[in-house]
Amino acid sequence: MSLKPLSGIRVLDFTAMPPGGFCTVILADLGAEVIRIESPSQKGKTSLVIGQVALSRGKRSMTMDLRRPEAVPLLKRLVRSVDVVVENAKPGAMEDRGFGYSQAHAENNGIIWCAITGFGQSGPYSERGGHDVSYLAHSGLLRAVSPDPLWQPAISLSLQAGALAAVVGIQSALIERSRTKQGAFLDISLAEAAGWFLTCGVNPLSERPYAISSTPDRRIYQCQDGRYVAVASSEPRTWTALCEALGLAHLGEQLHKPDESGQRAHMLAEKFLTRPAVEWAELLSAKGAAVTLVNHGQQVKEDPHVIARRSIADVGGTAVVANPIRMVATDGRRSDTATGAPPPVGADTTDVLLSAGLTQDELEQLLKAGVI
Image (cartoon, helix red, strand yellow):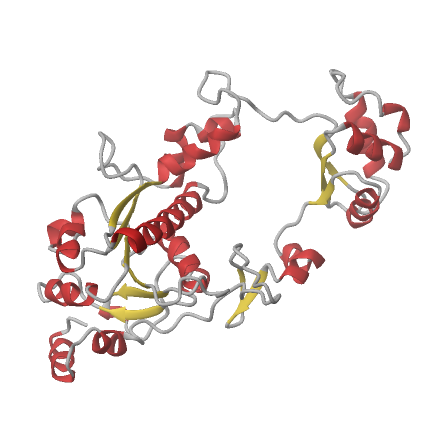
């Protein structure tokens, strides 16, 4: 079993925004050769992609001025040796420049073209711009997560969801191509990816979507040291274990009774204030209750489970979240959790173009003209 299942797959990455970076860094971790196309004006600098090390790691970098007319024939030559293209331009923008899916397909009918946009390639909103909150709002997820319309998340949600949808689509298209020898065009909408979260609800598209309410058995409690624990003891077994370990065994039969006055929640809250969070998490988990530390920042990196599973990786001195996809071979070998540090912008331009069939003279002319 290969621990790098995408080894031999070559990806051209035209994306400058996080959804594309999230997608292609997973492809790189899985063994694909990801080549970022970046501006010659940034040559030698660190990649400008948002997240820099986290989203640029494990990739190669070449420079090309996509505004120059010489870029089009150069890309057509390059795409003949490529398996996948990932881009996040407005619908039709790359076609208008002379290098979109139709032009790439004419050069390589096995090309898999993945276009990631906010609202998709078609429909009345396809030309609209936006950010994560735009897609969460449109999809219905924003109000499903919180009934407060003035609330918005402090981190993005739709961007990562869209990236994962793109990875699944690309891998599926690669499998299909192995059978048909034909490529595909993937239309990934971040708004639709956000909407996919609603599939976990009961009748989520009604006026009153299903919500997981805060009850004594499912609540965040503050502990003696100021840290918090997340209690999710919502089954009779785990609720009984929680109550007994807290010295509140008489509450064990009251799991599904309404706590209208908040009395039970108050009793639990007082108990949690008597010990530090780490002690409660270890003690209650050992007793069979579902209780987890609420980690933040440095606490994530110091968590023993995170350390044991190498969920945080050091890449060039920067801590990054590791690839969540782990592969284990029959002999017990495990895949790496993160790829290496990102190269300087343009570090791989010469090597990539030479491998695509360009001559040294052609390279020197393009370099002199400022195309690469």
